[in-house]
Length: 242
Length: 307
Image (cartoon, rainbow over all chains, first blue to last red; front, side):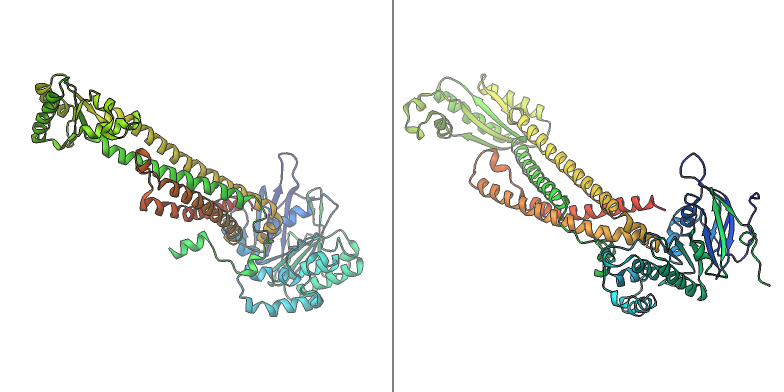
């Protein structure tokens, strides 16, 4: 692993520069992590359990600030960003959790509509996008069902629909196929690819190598013991346009 | 004003209210608030009545003195009292003077002796002093009393001047102290109520932490999240406040009904008055506002600790 170097300033959607993260005074969970994510790209984040994947993703979806280093999201420094500006940035990021995190007392329809309601979209304007999402994930028949009555695969599809309904610029998914069977995993990956084709940058954390092999254009980041390996250098020194 | 009220008791559309599961009145908060509100109102009512009593007593005794003439000969005693009353009435700082009729004294003593009016020969045989009540204008009380002493001793050298403030003053001070105890109780119970709201808000945040985290992650602002909880807590506390107020009102009405039968003595001065009733009516509204502000500040402070 080479010493961390500053990422090239440019049009990157996300830039990490010499980022370290520690939860306790002991060892760092992440050390000297530097990379840049380009708009419209597809990334897999891999690594063994405990390597720091979830911690890295938390910083990507603005749930965690680094202990040191610089994190720029959409060109803004996350560390220096005043707290009141975070919601505006979070609305540009969709998040899919391994454990779905659906709100149990809301129906499928209401769970999917949640980001739009939070963004202040009028009730009259919700039906169209929500129905479109329900159709996209194939759950029109379960629109009024509550999460407890849905299968794992159905819950994950609802979680994905909720993450993408507001058309995020960045989609972050933490082990999205960890709780579903292989066929469903392939179907879910198809949803991510479809979204990526529409221009959304996608970052999927997984250790499912079969899944990774399904997306040809995807780039891979590998975390080991809190350090990022980038054998091709494409993450830290991406090709510039022109 | 409207904006401020909306901040305290925000309107939340039904679909957003559903973000929190419905569990209205299922927790202990409304009941605790009801008990505390009832105690607050009863303490406030007690304080108002005591304050009114202390004020009336204070006004009554502030400038009141009684001159007691104890000359043994009844005819001479009455004559001395009459002369003193005439001369005292001409003194500039004496606002009002009155001879206390012997029948009035006998009627008072008759209550203790078990006699009825002036018919009791034993009561008539008592050597009662002649009393002259004087109301003095505001001024140097010591100088006034000295001047009165000089005047009365020139007429009857064994006369005594009794300033009511000297012997009823401690009672007035005691009543005022009890008033302050009531005020202190209102403040402490209000603080306890605020603490209950704070604990309720924190408990609600802990219970719904996963939902809050999710709402944050999809871009909800602290204000949006706090409004949800603030609305819920405001409704819970409003139920408690309404319940406690009704309980206190019933108790106060019963006491007022019993009080209406008392027409003499210190007790009759312990009334609440129109202003007091207005204050008691305003207290529940103030309590709702306090609960809403406390909940809002607690929630925003707790949410700020999250990234």
